[in-house]
Structures are given as C-alpha cells and as structure tokens.
Length: 311
Image 1 (cartoon, rainbow, N blue to C red):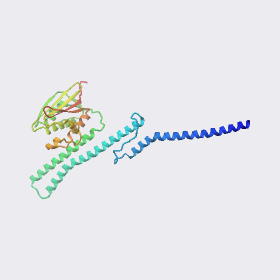
Image 2 (cartoon, rainbow, N blue to C red; image 1 turned 135 degrees about the horizontal axis):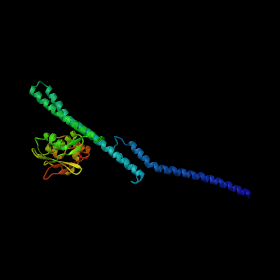
Image 3 (cartoon, rainbow, N blue to C red; image 1 turned 90 degrees about the vertical axis):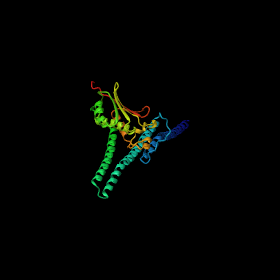
Image 4 (cartoon, rainbow, N blue to C red; image 1 turned 180 degrees about the vertical axis):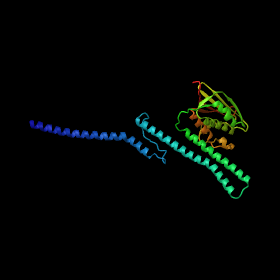
C-alpha cells in the first residue's frame, strides 16, 4: 500500500511539473502574441514615420483605431503634423518659384537695357533715358525685396512694442501728403493712439490706399476713415472700383496672388501689397476684413487695439 501511494505521489509530482511547464509555455506564448499584437500598430507608425521625407510628403499612417484611443490619437496627431509639413514645404516651394519669377522680370529688363546701350555709342539724352529705366526697374526690385523682408519678419516672435504712434497725426500729415494728387477724402478722429512702429503703420495704410487707387477708375473717389470705439480703433478704406469676388476675399491675402479681374484688365502689380498689409495688421494684434461697397467697390476694414494715454 505504501509503495502504491509513493508511486502515485511520484507520478502526481511529475504530472504537476509537466503541467506547470506546459502552463508556463502557454503563458509565455500568449504574452508574446499579445505583446506583438499590442505593439504592431506602434511598429507600423514607426515604419511609416521613417519613410516620410521630402520625396514622399503624401505618406500617411493608415491603421485601424478608434479616435479616442491612445493609438488613434497618436495616429491623428502625427498625420496632422505630416499634413502641416507638406503644406509648408509646398508653400515654400511655390514661394521660391514666385520670388524668382518676380525678381527675374526687372533683372531681365535691366540686362536687356544695358546690352542695348552697349551695342554702340549713344547720345547723352539716350543714356539719360536708359538710366531712368534702369532706376525704375531697380526700384521695383527694392520694393519686392523690402516687402518680402517685412512679411518674413512679421511671422517671428517679437518683443512687445513700446512706441506709441499718434495715428491721427500720421494720417493727416505723412500719409495725406503722399496722396495729394488723388481724390482722397479723410474722416479722422483726433487723438487716436496705437502701439507699434510708425513706419509700419504708414506702410500698412499706404498699401491699402495704393490698392484702392490701382483698382479704381482714374480720378475716382477714395475715402479713409478712422474712429475709436470702446477699446479699438476702426480704420476703413473705401473705393468705388472693380470690387472683389466673394470667393477671392481670402485668396487676395496670399503672397503673389492676382485676381482674374486684375489680369484681364491688365492692371500691373506683384501680388504682395495685401499680403504685407495682413502681416502688419496681425503683427499689431489687429484684424482685417473685406466688405462690399455699394453700389460697387470695396471696403477694407482694419480693427486695431487702441491706447488710452490717460491710463
């Protein structure tokens, strides 16, 4: 009996050992399988991220996961990042092409004029005319580069401006003197103050007025109003020109954008003025809107935070 019991216990021990070993292998195998299944989407994300480059900007992470899950949130976050990078690279590429094209025009004109003048001796009057043409083209290049520099700098982090500008005085003196030959009507409240650089506010208003002059009939009326509300200053430039289509009201702020109307009418320009205006308005913590004028024309409305000197 004792021998049978001992044999039974030995067999039971051996069975338990084999059962424990088998159970251990099952647990290990299940753990490895579960780990692979768990990390599979992460590995897919890593593989896709490693293949994302300048030649493969449209690559996206395609894994099935709920938006509220951690994996789903990681997928959507990275896809959003990839989309922003793709948009930025495309915009940068287009920007470089447009800059090259815009600068090539005056450079070609300058080169052609110089080549023409060097073919033979010219009279002093011809040399004078050539220098005037060269100066005009050089001014065009300077204007393009200056505008691009302001636009590029406006996107960078800047310290809080400490200078206070008397906008009323700026408009009535410096700005108005530059537009004496145009039918410019002013309705400007006194003592309008804003924070920022005087040169940039002058550039902002000049570009808005030049834009209105360019797209208005010769000798057409242009109106500039400036008034203060409770905490803001409202600037409005009104014209009675060709107007802006609703589907173009956001596009015209893009660099180098030219409307179909302007192209058909042969109105010259670089498509940088309004892009510069928007950059300067946003730098001053303001907002710009485009409204339809009645019966025809456009109203540019700029809202800027005002400064109360009594504070």
